[in-house]
Length: 284
View 1 (tube, one colour):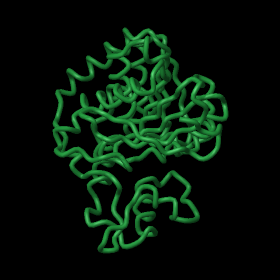
View 2: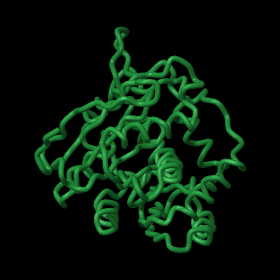
View 3: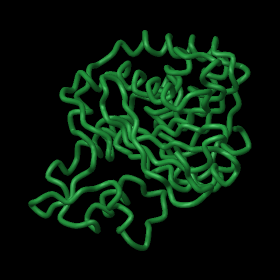
View 4: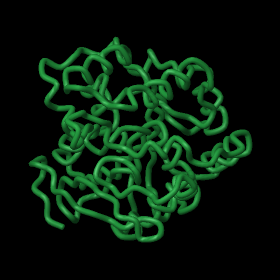
């Protein structure tokens, strides 16, 4: 696929596990090193727009993927097909289709998926890994409950984009509110009843539970044995990833690098996009 450097994204599609259709935006030339961007739960590929453009301008081919059940990717037929192993299988399929080696930049769930993929594929396919406000030992308290409450809230949608913007402002009080809510059209869809609803599958939150202690150990083992450069980017205001959790991860993976963004929370890439992109460009 041919894409203009730092120009408008080109929409493309990949096939994930079981042939499920996955939507993506791409920037940059085909022969440039590839950076694969994986968003968090409830987000879409559009959350990476600014980072994608700037990475492409710095000589990378960038692929921002919509996770299954999110954005313009297809929805799985049942909650069981949103299992974490299936998400990892999707990414492995995308990397196979891209060919060669990639750098993975993953936010929240996308970061944990990227870490699992890197452990499965190894350094032959994943050359670097960036974990955005996530490490295996995430906080299970207020921050996690706040995210789930926001995602489960407003099941009947919003009467207007402005109403949705009010909900986001309450959820992210530290972030400057945009002058116009029109950008939310990328993350919401207007249904026949006229109401706006988030563009992701509610069944995603009903995916199978895993033994988190076992999963954490597996991810930490994978990270310690990976042998590729890893960068952890934490939002200083995050209530999902504590400084202590990052320090525990760095003890397991002592060659990993760490950057903390002042004024950013769990949605670090969007909270302080300039500082985030600068740190990622320098690393990759």
